[in-house]
Length: 313
Image (cartoon, rainbow, N blue to C red; front, side, top):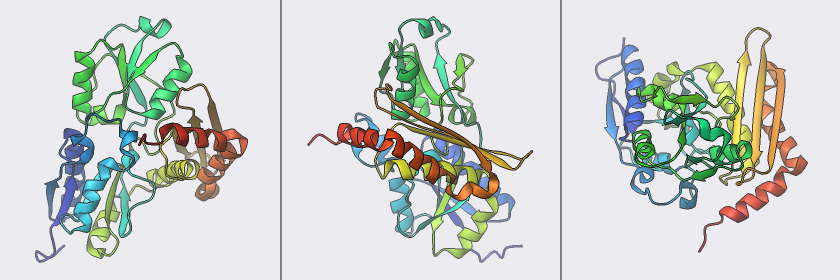
C-alpha cells in the first residue's frame, strides 16, 4: 500500500458542474487505488468570455489553457478534460496520462416537445461549427444560431429563447442528470473527435503521478480517440473547421470501423469517408483517411474555411 509520506495528487478542474463531475470521477478512481487527492478549481477564459464565438478567440484550447498554465506553474498535478476540448498538440512538457472508458458518443437535439419544425423551418442553437455545418447540410432551410456557456447555461438559454431546439453532447447531459425527456438522438451526425471521452493530462516529468493515473487508462478508448484525433490533426493543421470523426472497435472480428467528415461552414459541401480495417492498421488509419479527403478536394475546402475564419483585424 502507498506510504503516508507520498504526495497528494492535486486535480485541476474548471468550476462548471460538468467539469467538477469529471474531476470527482477521477478523484474517486484514484482514491479507490489508495492515492491521496485534492480538487483545485480554476476559472477558465472560455467560461469568462461568453460574448464571442469560440472560434473567434483564435485558440482551440480555450478550455484547457488555464489548467495547462496552472499545471506548468506547479499549482496542480493533473487536469481532467472532456477530450474533445483538448487541442491535438499538447503544450510542451504536458503528456496524456490516461483516457477513461468512453461514455455515450452521440449528439442529441433537445427540443420543446414539438418536432414539426423538422419538416418545415426551425432555428437550432449550437456554438459548434461541426454541428452547425452538419445540421445545415441535412436541413438547409433551417437557421442556426450561436449558443455558448457551460451545459447548464446552454439549457437555460434554450428555455429562455424561442428556438426550436439546441444540440448537445449526450454524455455531458447524462453525466450531470440534465438530459430531458424531450430529445432526439442524432445518430446521423458524426460526433466530434473523442466525444464522450475524458482525458487526464499530467507533467511529463512527474513519474509518481503518471504511474498513478495510467492505471485508469482504457486501451480501447485510447486507440479509438487516437485515430479520431489523428484524422482531425491531419485535416486541420491547427485551424478550427467542421470536422467529425468516430472510430469503433469490433471485438467479434478484431476490426476498427471509422467514419469521418469535413464540411463547409454553410454545410453545402460535404466530404465523408467510411472504412473498416483490421485492428493491426490502427496507427495510421486517421492519417490515411484524412489524406484521402484532402486529395479529393478537401485541401481546397480547408483553404476556404481558413480564409473565412480569419480573425477580422
